[in-house]
Image (cartoon, rainbow, N blue to C red; front, side):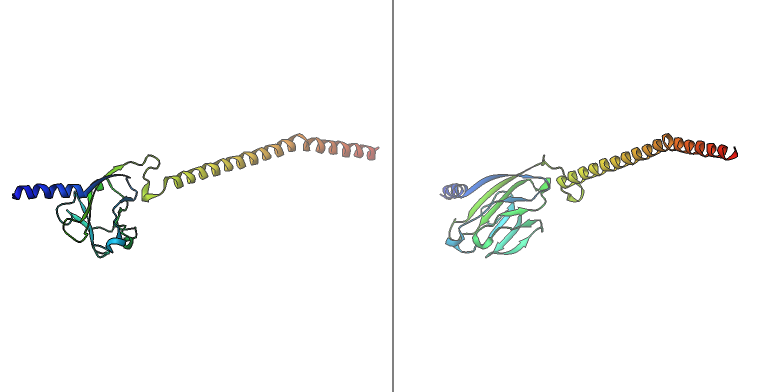
Length: 199
């Protein structure tokens, strides 16, 4: 008889627990969804743990709350960024690391026998192909814009040096080609004047 009770109890707990899969990116914030109808039940206690939701409480609790107030938080990286008063108790993991991958369980303590809402979420982390992690979490797009700016600046510097060089060469050519002739003509004219004066 006792075995039959455990069998039905295990079926009930399996039915009331749902499983989700969330894909996040390494180094980014990842949100694991969990919510309930706060208008019907009011503000309830809940917990988040690492591992599947057990028969009671949460396994390896990382965050727990009583009546909407956080009473335990294992790390400041675990945040509740939704409106808890409206029933949004989704867990946000800041700056997700490879070690954060795995199964997380959310239990919402709904009053009554076997009424708790249980959500198991498998977090899968992937490398972000659009941006690569840069030192000090510098956004890669910003880094690329800066590199492009440096390239434009280098091109403009090269253009200025080229034009200054061209101007110097033109001035030198002008001076060598036109100024000596005018100087020789002036010397020839003054020599001719001197000759006339002597005569």
